[in-house]
Image 1 (cartoon, rainbow, N blue to C red):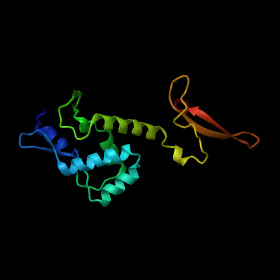
Image 2 (image 1 turned 90 degrees about the vertical axis):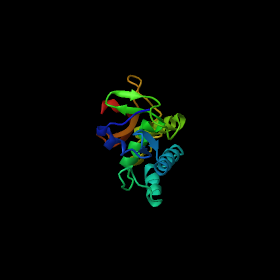
Image 3 (image 1 turned 60 degrees about the vertical axis):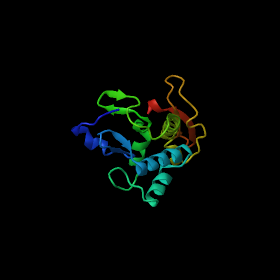
Amino acid sequence: RVRSSAASDVYKRQVLGYKIGNDRQYEIDPVGAKAVRTIFTMYAEGKSKTQIVNWLNEHGFKTSRGNAFNKNSLSRILRNDKYIGVYRYDDVVLEDAVPPIIDKTLFDKVQATFRHNYTARAKAKAIEDYLLTTKVFCGHCGEPMVGESGTSKTGKVHHYYKCCLLY
């Protein structure tokens, strides 16, 4: 278990789902933990960040600072491995140092979904439907390939896939 220092108490109070107990160690805050579990479950079930933010705000949940949720606060929560018991301070990483709120299987599923959605973030903005986005990878570097189009001298539009690193 990790004891807090005066310098890190400010940081610790800013983690949704946890509070500092009388013994100056992390304890699970039931209301915040419910919000965290809901966030991870909804995202793993395929809900969008906007849908999750709207649901949390409609049901009166607040961030650790007492503000309404937004996509940025949601992203920070989804990437925070403290929720599976990992404590990080500077370059020190301790496993099982914090009481976990969610299990590692759910966390790993959310991380995979988060990475997939990040690589496909421009797919919804595309005018043309590039069906192979997130499915085609560069044979040289392994990075995802994205759909792109260009217009030739004759005015004909050509559609093709391009490596992300070649931008």
